[in-house]
Length: 358
Picture 1 (cartoon, one colour):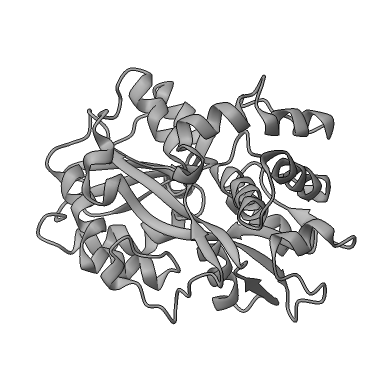
Picture 2: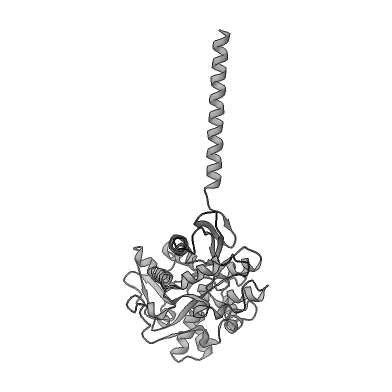
């Protein structure tokens, strides 16, 4: 009897140990399987083996899946990308730029506006002051500010002026004090009014009229798109590539290229602490024909004019202007988006919208 009880006790003990071992394994797997995040944006890992260099890509919100699902895997298949792995962080452009300036690790930075890149030159020379001397002036991709509307365009919106005058329009656009996308949107409305013959005061009044119609001003371009997708508002000011993506995914939407609009130019650079030569090789890949064609497949206009398909990327009916028309981002940032004295900051304060970048 004693032997039988001992055997049963040993059997129970062995069973408990096996169960505990399995439980520990499941907990370890669960803890190690998710993605991490920071206040500046979402983070995830993708790409090659852990034995090579690791590139930390920090960027504005919208190209997140293009990097993780297309560009990084394609680079990993090249001889230069063999063994390279990636960690990614994407979010509102201004927030991402401030995070890197505050110490967030980054090898490659891709922002929405030039002023977000310049911050990293001015604050500790994290990026070389000669970043604009890279190929294509340091611009990774082009795009346009377009108007995304409900399928069939029930409001008949065809221009920014229509948007300004339509009483039923409920606009979604990001907050310009966190999002580069929002700043492009505002300068598109402002510049279009100038092109139509308005003076600066009248053009600023057009901006105010559009901002008065905003139903929401989320923190980033991607958040604004998601808000519109979930039913907020009936008009979204957005990147052309986001509109193309929405149509491809079967959303009940369509987009309008206004007669006049602005050419979006998104800057990219490696940081001074980036692994060499892998970081530079990755940028060269993004500017290569293969890289630019991958951008185009995802709705981004190639910076190489020879690769721009006019049917896929039609020109605005009347004209396309650039931020240089207004003196470049340094001047625009001070004149329009300075948190204390900028003209847009004053409009947003009147409307009760936060102008804090924190």
